[in-house]
Each structure stands twice: as structure tokens, then as C-alpha cells.
Length: 293
Image 1: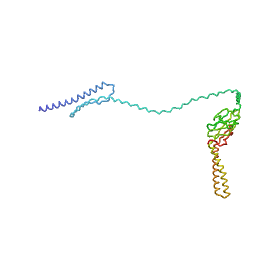
Image 2: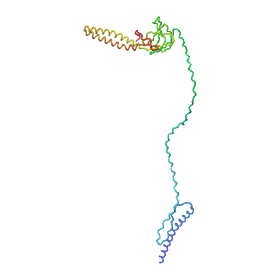
Image 3: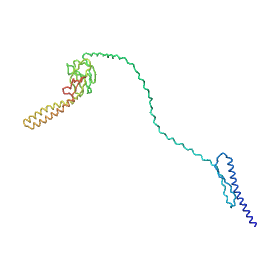
Image 4: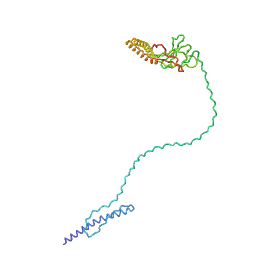
């Protein structure tokens, strides 16, 4: 029986060793927890779950679990800085209209009554300078370029000489002289007289085309005889009951009438008119057929 007792003693010894091995870690954990609590009396620490040693019971011993290390105090995480919200540009309010400071109306200044003004003195009239005997200040303007005022002596009316180119204001000797106006391709005017003395002799020329005037005169030269001849032939044919004379006379009469009707506007456009300062006509186109067509 000594073998069985020895076996039981060995079992009890191993059981005691297992229990001691279980109690030693638990006691060391409790000791470490109390010491940590004693070193930090003011710092609030999260409640820790104390592991108490199991009381021995009559139940069969449980298999011991490995001891868990005490939980370390983990510092709270530092919150990351929250980025400041980006400033949204606020709408710029329009500037308020500047209000001009209202000024109090200035008191009306009562001006003393002015003395009656003296009547204005009449301006001194400079007496006109007497013109030289036989001279006159001639002002010439024309609708045609290069218009000349020509003078000729009454004793020799064909010897015309140029005296003033339009526009001009020139004193001219006009005593006993004839005057006319002429220009290239313009119908020359008839001769007229300029009176010497004080003041200005205005000569305003409205020129006419010499070519139109020439064609107008030619139309009259052809139209008037044709109309007369045609009227005679038509009358003879009607009296003698000759149809051929009536037809020829009607054709000549129509040609003459057409020539006369065409010549009238040509003559009007080819007429040169000369007026004085009052607008009165003092000369017109020369009655002769112009040399230049």
C-alpha cells in the first residue's frame, strides 16, 4: 500500500503547487494596482476592475487561466484642429449717394437803387472819304469761275480791256466808260454803265452757258422758217386738194414746232444776267450769237 500513499502525496503536492502558482500572479497584480493608486491620489483615474482571488471551494480545482496584465492608462486622443471655415466674400454694398449738405439760403442782398444811367452818347460818324473824281469802288462776284469785268471807252466800244477778276473789290475809273462781264464758255453780257461816286457798286453775275445759247439760237433759226414753210404748204394743199402738199406741209410744220420748243429751254439756260446791289437787272446776255460753242 506504500505505492498508493506515495501517489496521493504527489498529487496533493502538485495541486498545492498549482494553487500557489495561481495566487502569486494575482497578489502581484493587486500590489501593483494599489501602488499606482497611491502614487496618483489627485488624478482622476478610470475605475479599474479589481480581480479578487477566488476563494477555495470544495469543488474540483479549475484549470488556471493565464494572468492578464493590468490595463495601462491610455491618454485621451488629441483632437485634430478643425480648419476654420473659409471666409466667403460678402457682397459689397453700393456706396451710399453722397448727400450734399444743404446750405441755408443766403439772405437777399438789397442793392441800393442805381442812379439813372446817362443817355449813351451818339457814336461819332466818320465822314466818308470823298472818292477821286470819276472813280467808283466796284464789287464783282459771279457764278462762273474766271469771270472778268471788262471796260471800254464810249468813243471806242470795241476796245475792251480786262479790269477786275471776280471776286474783287477794286476802285475803277468808270467816268465815260462802258462795262460788261465775260468768261470762258459763258455768254457775255450786254454793255452797261457804272456810276462814279461814293459807296460801292455791286455787280452780281449769274452766268449762262454759251453752248446752250448757241444751240437755242440755231433751233430758232431752223424752227421758225420750217414752221412758216410747213404752214404755207399745208394751206395750199388743203385749198388745191393736193394730198402730197398737205403731207409735206404737216411734216415741215411739225419739225419747226419741235425745233422751237427745244430751243426755248436752251436759250433760258444760256442767258447771262447781271444785277446790282438792289437785285435789279442792269444787263443780260448779248443778243449776238456767241463765237464759242
